[in-house]
Each structure stands twice: as structure tokens, then as C-alpha cells.
Length: 436
Image (cartoon, rainbow, N blue to C red; front, side, top):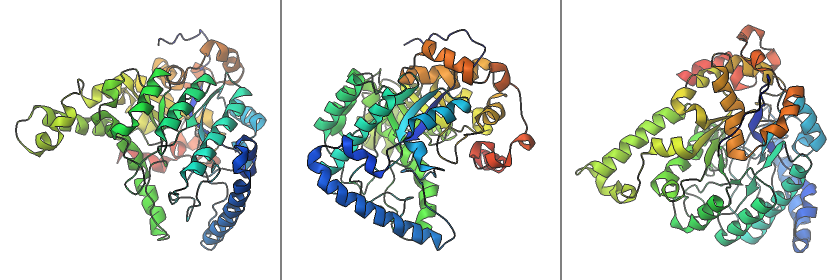
């Protein structure tokens, strides 16, 4: 699809990473009535678990209040579900298009030892799947309140492939053009890995319905256990890698070969990993496919024999990175990653996101790039991946979004407010860490 960019002096700023979710009891109207009694029991257990978590962290001088399911903190819980507040705050921050990832526990999600760890897997698949469907219907209602600005993402369940196909079709019919959230299947999960042929109906349904496959950091980690505080540190050290690995799982299992129009995006898993990872994958691919000797050919030859492209070529054709609060050092890597393959995100409403200092962040990060490059990452790439109507967004952009000249005007770290430096993109210490 070719995106036509309206003529305007303003950037049409779209965030490819924002989060939403109902408050705990708000999901009940969207849940099938046969689950309502069990839902009340689950709410009570979840509230008790939350109090235990808060007590655990309070003893260490920290708090877990308003922490999202991916481990990111949220300032005020009602930002998850208050439609009016979300619009008001994001527009005031210069953002007019939003991709909506989940952020709160759906009904019947098992409680984790801490909100920074993967919850234990439950064998009550029927209830878990009902809870995810309830979230999808809740998010549809949120999208319907601002359909031009919001691209909702539907959740699926690897434990029910046939049901997931039906849910993909339902989401497409009901305007959830954000696509579907692909959960991870780490080794300790009860599900087949993502490279399993059992998921082919999911990939086929997504491709047939033009539904982007989304994979968000935090959703693919194994359970690190209750070994506080080391387990929390392991989560933070490894969480991105567990998300990144899905890229080569789908490449080397032929998903992108079989479905050349399918779009895949890894969100909030950083951007700096892409160049080195693609070089490594291309090297393995070449040795697996063309070498007559060595373990790579023996073990990998059968997997790559039907791959017509190198991993880097699949990436260029149909893969993207959701670049949440893109760091200035990462922006310099974007031409190597592919300017057409990067979608900027604010990570609203997490406190590590760029809100409410997005203009300062955009100036710090994008002033070093051309206006054309910046426009692709702020606007047209996300419009292509998530089917935003840029003509419909143009009036809102001209009212709320910064001009292209404003974003192209450099700003120094000394001019960044102290309150903004909780965002990694605006903390000068993180720039050294990122390029190291």
C-alpha cells in the first residue's frame, strides 16, 4: 500500500506504542455471563495478590502500584481506561494517532509473584481465553470513541488455534486495525514454540485479513521465579532478547516466505539490536544453505532450503521495529535498520515514556535527521502498518502536533526538564549505555 502524505507544515505524529486496559472490575460487562461468578472470585484473589506484592516492595523502599503487564510503571491508573483523559493528554503532548497495546491484567490471568515476572501458566485455558476475548471487546468500545485516532490490537491465545483464527476474523470485521498481539511461547510455557507448524492457520488468517502481527517486549519471558531481588534483575537484563528471538523463529520456519504480505513488528524491544542481529542471521543462513560442510549445514539446511530471501531481505520487505521513546544514539542507526522499517512510539501512559515532554524528545532525537526521514518514522510507516487515514488526521495534527520546523530545531540535554529524564530517550546517561 502506498501512503499519500497530505501537504501540511505539521508532522502528523502517530505513536506505534501506547497502552490501555480496563480497571479490574470493568471487564465484567464484556465477559460471557457464564463466567461472572468465577470472575468475582478471581477479582478478590487478584486484589489480595496485589496487596502482597505492594507489601513486598514497600519493605524494600519501592512500590509496584500501577505497573503494567510488561513491567512498565504507570502514573495514574485511570489513564489506562479514561477515553477523555487519554485524548486530552496525548493531544496536548502533540500526538494524534495511537496504537493500543494491552496494559492491565485481563480476567482470569494468574497472579505472578511480582508484577515484573511472568505469571505462572494456568491449565484453565477456557477461562484464560474468555478473559482475553473480554479485553478485545472492551478495546473495541474504546476504539469506537475515537476511531480515526485509535488502532486497537486484539489478543489471541496459542492454546486455541481455531478460536484464535475466529478472533482474528472478528477483530478485522470490527475495525481493530492494529492487528493482533502474538504472545510468546518461552520454553517453560505449555504451548508449542512460534516456529511450530501448528500455528499456520493463525499466520494465514492474519495475512488474509491484513492484520499486522505485533510482538511486544515483556510478553515472551519465562518465569524467573521468586528469587527476589535477583530474579527482577534477570527480567530486566533478558526481557528484550526473549522478544527479539521471535523474529528468527518466524523467518527460519518459513512464515514470511509463505506470506509475503504479512507485516511483523517488534515493539519496545529496542532498535540497536537490529543491524548486528541481521548480520548474524544472514551469516547463519548463508552457511546453512550453501556450505557443504559443518554443523550449520547439517542442522539448518532443511530449514532454509525453501527460503528464497536472506533474513535481512525478509526484514526489509515485511518487518518493522516499534521504536518506543527512540534514543538519539539509536536514531543514527535507523538508516542502517531501514528508515522505512521504524515506527516511533511514546509508550503512553508509562512513566518511562516521553509524555508529557514529547516535543523535547522529538527535537533531541530527530533534529539530527532529515525532515523526510523523520516524517517516515513519525507518520507514514505507522500509517502503512496500522492503516491510519492521514487525511482524516491532518486537521488534528494542524491543531495539536508540532511543526516540521519545530522538530528539526535542535535542543541540548541542558534544556531537557529534570522531570523528563526518567524517559531513557532524554537521559544523557543512557546514551553512553546504548552505544556501548
